[in-house]
Amino acid sequence: MAVVNRCAVAVSPRQPMLEWTLPFRSPLDDEAQEGEASLYLISPYDNEPRTLERLRVCHGAIFEAELEIWCRDRGPWPSDRSAERFLECFDVRFHHLVDDLGDEVLRSDQMATAFEQQLRQTLG
Image (cartoon, rainbow, N blue to C red; front, side):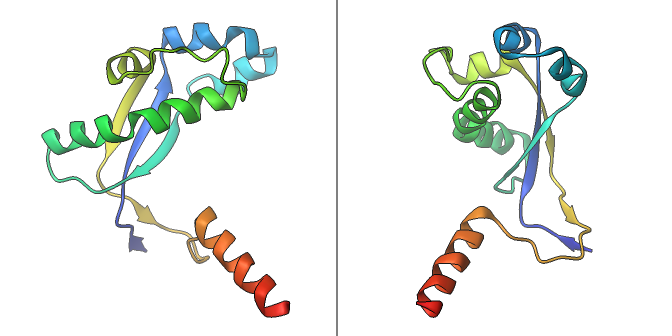
């Protein structure tokens, strides 16, 4: 087991977000999404004020990722994606300890892309 040098924020949709998703949902989505939360890794924090600051820094990226799950076209996205609106649209839970229990090497998309580029250059 290895402790990862990240904290996590779990977000789950509240009523305003659920209402916004209605035109983009199917009946299967309703069952699959019920009680589901998305988990995002963020920089570590050591106290509540820093937690709130981390949220202010990353809420926009999380908001956009959640909107994109339902609609890739940015046209219908709500124009108000402020931190205040984010908190109206999502329940938020912070997790300060993230343990990696997996056996395989932890990779990110950036690492995978860099590896693929390096492999292409090597193979020529």
